[in-house]
Image 1 (cartoon, rainbow, N blue to C red):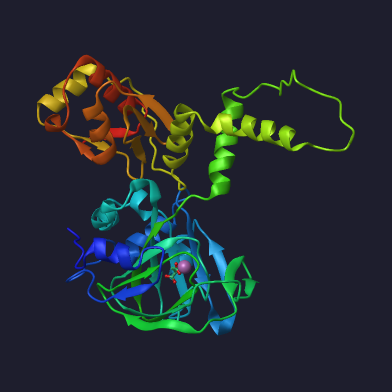
Image 2: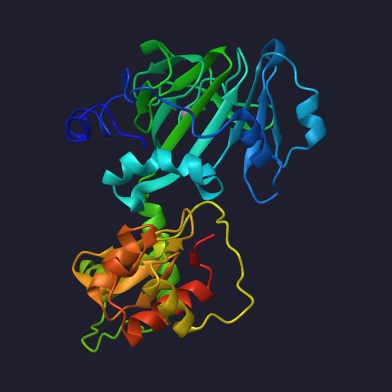
Length: 376
Ligand code: SIN
Ligand code: CO
């Protein structure tokens, strides 16, 4: 079990979206949740997003996965890094590293990226638009972080589309050892160099952009055939200036735009469906046989559990517990307690839910869709 050896509320008040920090011994007696071999195994899977970055003799190259077994048998001693995204979707042990971070909202969480780095390996100096907690596992890496980007850094696209910057003056310059943590807010340039073979874990959080909210809102409006109404102005008067959009015209059109945004029910849907979408592929298995409600009832009554698919985002609005947002869909749920259980827990047993026909129906549908699954 992973527990944080620092006070998260104090960290949030002093650092979140404000400034980077290294926390030495953020985890006591840190043990890697995944081995380099297991990581290489994930990088061989076609459903899993991975890349291999080489920087031999200062020449950067990126090879995207899936990587072959042969690829791994001919590796050099140094100057490379293997990166696997969303390991929490595919490797249950690595997902347990996220447990202490569940005090932060699920809707902000993006993924757990795991890196194995050979000496001198890294991805070079760059800027992310993510909040990241980089936990150092075995090995040592030397990290530098610069001041917040205010347009002073020059970007250069390296071979293989590595987004790098030319360099920066460090405000943090420190070696991370097992159990240490580096937090970097969006917009701070950083670079990790590897001193000895290393496992590192990047727990990424991503705040939505205004553009994305508006884009999703527009998709929702069009998809639901809303706002299909022209401006009506029975008070139209003659104009002396043919080319003018009057201030009143503009106000009326602005009102048309705002009135769509003024519907709380639509906003609930737009925000719930947007934030519950995972940005990384899920380990989704199609269920071919029919799942019976009776079988589920029996399973739960016998003390069995059902489990949420790893990485599935399940959310609700604090002021509406009768709708649950799952993987971009809004699903009605009659029982507010069930909404809370589905959203806040990874495993469900009979203690956490009331067995009744409507709950059994909904749970059976979720099992049938592959969103939850029976004990392995
Ligand atoms: C790395 O571990 O070198 C890449 C992680 C990052 O910079 O976000
Ligand atoms: Co980065």
